[in-house]
Amino acid sequence: MRRLQFWLIALMLVASAAPAHAQARLDVVASFSILGDFARNVGGERVNVTTLVGPDGDVHVYTPAPADAKKIADAKLVIINGLGLEGWLPRLVQSSGGKTAIVAATNGIAPLKIGGDADPHAWQSVANAKVYVANIRDGLSAADPAGKTSYEANATSYLAKLDALDAQVKAAIDKIPADRRKIITTHDAFGYFAAAYGMAFIAPQGVSTESEVSAKDVAKIIAQIRKQKIPAVFLENVSDDRLLKRIGAESGARIGGTLYSDALTDAKGAAPSYLDMMRHNVKQLAEALMS
Ligand SMILES: [Zn+2]
Image (cartoon, rainbow, N blue to C red):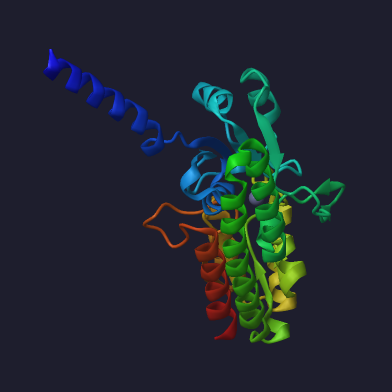
């Protein structure tokens, strides 16, 4: 009897101690990999982040799976880019029941316009990435007030890394002679980078990877490369390479490498984090345009 009592007490002690050890993490869904990286940096140990569009995935043309609606329904917070990037999201949110809090990471950013539409690729300027991080910090704090201090501390330390990154990008681009700061990319993902750091990006495919490129567009780009002496053509991890390789071959511009525009890579790739992605892109640009 005494032995049974002992075990009962021991069991109760274990049970009461358990929640402190296995504290449930806050389930957070990010629409694509770059937002997922920001959310992990700000959320730290308190969050469990799932991304819908994973490494090297194309967020413009994503087709949600039925499991995605459940991920959203089960989450405490959904982080999206906004500015029309996730055209597939409203229906998905509706089929999830629409009860989960949503934060748009671009809140407060004045969008660049391409034609009449907002350019959604705001993360390509590090100054904007800082706005993303602040919005994510505030969204997490609202969803999990007990973690506010922790989110604020994580955000502050990550924002300092972004400040250092911004200075690094500026310094690297400043070294490229002004008349060589122009390249061709597949789709128009670098408008904010161009505006922030002083480079020209010309893209045959426009602001979304969805658009088709006509033979006339290709001829126009090739003429432009020759006329403006554009030194390099860059491939992207989210786009079909064939078009740019053809443009490179026909125009004589060199293939400068791969830029990461709308998606990170997995852990083994060149851009597993936002910081890695920006450093990689700048290194590629400098190598192709300085030589
Ligand atoms: Zn894009």
